[in-house]
Image 1 (cartoon, rainbow over the protein chains, first blue to last red):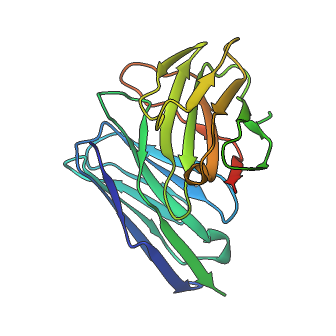
Image 2 (spheres, each protein chain N blue to C red):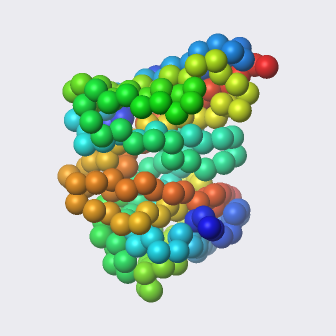
Length: 113
Length: 117
């Protein structure tokens, strides 16, 4: 079945440093979504990318969708302590469904103030 | 407006017992999803409802798991003869609809942490 892989599994940075997490799917995706989960919290939707090669920015966060629509990345510039949490990518799929999201294992970001 | 709510927030039960987990979706959302999240893992799809019917229950691990949504709003996930391996956070999400060719944004609830002793 469809697999979504994320690296790294953990990342610890000093406040102010940049951070990047990478996501790879075993199948071509119609879109990719990113979620953030704070410690003890629930996944919160960040963004959805649909087009091949798409780049979207949200303040210090930059999201990219690969040309082949099988990989994606999230880059955070100048991390802050409020960025702490686990970042998940998720892609729809599995039998051609648009609704069944397959999540990666996530990248846990910790920030040292 | 109010988000997705789930009750209870925590549930501790003994092996072999029956449990029910409740989800109240965002008002007006016709699509509802259940996921299970184990420690260190991403959410894992269990079941999807469009309205009252379970459109896709392919993620339910076995026949001990069952979910209903009788009036197209509140949903209950039911687990019979619980096992220690069922311990996890059970997340509910809702979206406006699931339309062909689109993946609507899924809004997650706070989850129910189930512990089976």
